[in-house]
Length: 592
Ligand code: ZN
Ligand code: ZN
Image 1 (cartoon, rainbow, N blue to C red):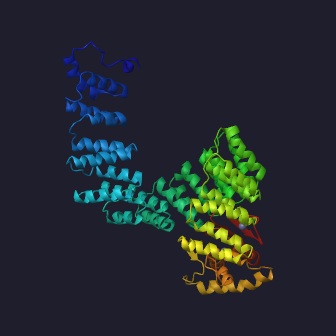
Image 2: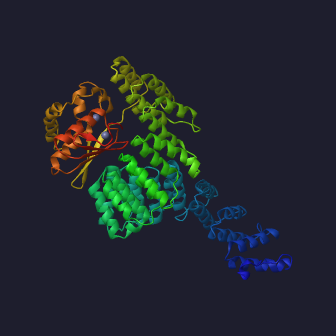
């Protein structure tokens, strides 16, 4: 202790020449950063930094080895003509410390000085492009490395795959990947996470299988990606397979993996299994608690979400901003107005957390659902953060649900000022007019959309069957069983009407253009997916559907009737929440 903390070089006690001789060996002997800084001070004191290149070079390398990047950069700057090796080292050090701009600047500086970057520089220049999501720069460096003959190096190629995947160019990443002769785990993982980040969930699953067939043992990131993809797709059977894989490979004890498993079960509609896994899990952190609360929220079990929140507090885990987003949105989904208000206030009062935009958004949603439209508008206008389109959007859907056209028009104006291109809001406004049979205004909205070049998002629904995920669009006849699917829907039409169904044609705009509204409605994507499920699965088993848009009011009605007629539980996850249809009713209480 005493030996380590003493000053290495007593000031003024050695003659200058002796110090000069001693410095290089002292520099090599430094085992602590503070010693290194003392030696650095001596170098500066004797003005050696510009005179002795090997000394400054070693100093820079020592700083890099201590991960003291700022000092390394300062010391590097005093070297007049750094060599290739030094450039490689400093580019690498900056990139691994997240200083991506600096790393790239040094890379180009190296080239400007006529030095040729090599296989030690490229991976880190590419890593910097990935970190900045700068695809153009990444492509430029790709060209450089081809010119320098480094395109067949496994580390360079791995970095290329990672760069393309992180910059959203999964196809290019795949081309490089397929060309590689030796693929390491890093490249496999980069591809899997590239697919899932770019929303290619089906490809994620396929690629993960390929990885296992190729005898590559996936790591945690790969497993997390694939569980996430299963959740997005609602692919429960596949998800179960990956869960058992996680158990077999010992990943289950990892908190992140367990949390992802729980989240996967919940997203696939198996809330009970999610809770079972959650209760068995030890060492739950705030992320895990928050995700369980969020699961109850999206399934419409607000009270259960509150119970879990209380358990969390009792377990001594401190809630964070994410926890409150989950909790408030759970209150909102279950229309627990008073509870929501109380928790919103407790954020700052009890837990010292300043509410952010998404917490205000939850409150606006909560007030909107409770029909407190004026209060919701007031909150948006007075909140200390700048409102965005989605917060206005949730008020707009509340206006639609409560038929308040005056406020709806006002709110839509605000939204179109902020973002004139989002199709969903035009649809909401148009449906609001349609509900009051104000057809000329419906037409006006349609013209506005055409004028501004707004395209509606195509609706689709997914269903997993026999280890595959099937995708249906509205009126989609591409599936080999489509004849059976359409005739089943036609057969169901009579008993549905018999139970008192009247089509709500104003919702037709959601998925398709008007004309033949009723016919179009009858073949919305979720209905096709449900019919497919009814045809192919054993009677009595639940049917699980995932839809990319909000489920329309008419489909919601029809699915309620179908659940009664065929005595099946039908679980539909739309973009907002879960709907559990059973015996003619839905868990959302017809408000979503
Ligand atoms: Zn529909
Ligand atoms: Zn519902």
